[in-house]
Image (cartoon, rainbow, N blue to C red):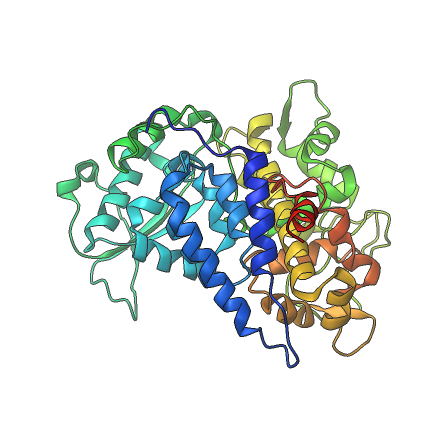
Length: 454
């Protein structure tokens, strides 16, 4: 409705604090969840469904609600209950997607409708595999085509088609002459075949009015509020090299804004390739290192602190290092004009916001599941070596049903790049979990509620 108002952050924080205490898992001997907790969660889900028709939320409030449930099936039920109660869902719904694996999000799209979960407001770097035989998926692809026509025809990247639509052995072939112009009309799109593509738009070509209009015409959101676009990133869609550079910048300069200022040697508020590559190379970003133990591929520390010694002499130029940094430059230069503007550089801030938010949520999940970070470290360190391997970290994080960037978080807190996390490194989760981008406003409220109902 045009005149609806959302729940205040303070009131929602009280709700979250009360629910978090009710659904917190209680682990019995043998690491089996108390069945009484499952009954409690079922009651909470029933209560949430009962009040859902009486409240309106923002998508950031829905993400906070999703985070109190450790079980991914419970998160799916909660999203199903509330996503249509989010007044800014088609604009900012992307911030909820990282709470689900790519497979789980696909299952939700099949259940709730591809058009309902389509990222109208923020389609950047979204990867699509579309079955043209399904009407709603065909309309999603047509929406991408219409959006590309309004913004830039090259926004649909690497489109490929499998005309036979064999799901078991797909045989995708590139469009020889690009996507046919006739497909601007929905009825001209064939009702058979599989199409895959990625959508990405240069910052200065984004047409937010068209995106709102498509959300209204195609998605049925006729009374969208004048809510600002809160641009977000899903780390599943971000190349590994970009993540490494973001992590290094945070370690080196503390923020992406400070990194841009340090790299921008010319007074033009733009970064050219030489500035970007030279600045990061001299700072030691993505320099080749030899970890003392073999770990997960990609965990060699591109994020290690610059003052640490490297196996590569400082006077040698690492060709691989330059190529990695250059690939990140090409990723950021969405306008393909040879420069990165401040607005294009903001893409890295969105990546960091999701990574920081995920660390905050992982820390909370570990504290809820194990009781404290100290208990979590002792439980994860299975061989009592005083350090955690990636396999140990991954296994125990999976016990909490955390759907998020596990490998990327491991990379970030592995300060010395040895593919292991010792105690001080593990507690970096505490350091970087302060002031998350999407606070849940529960600080102090849980203790107050416990005093009231004791």
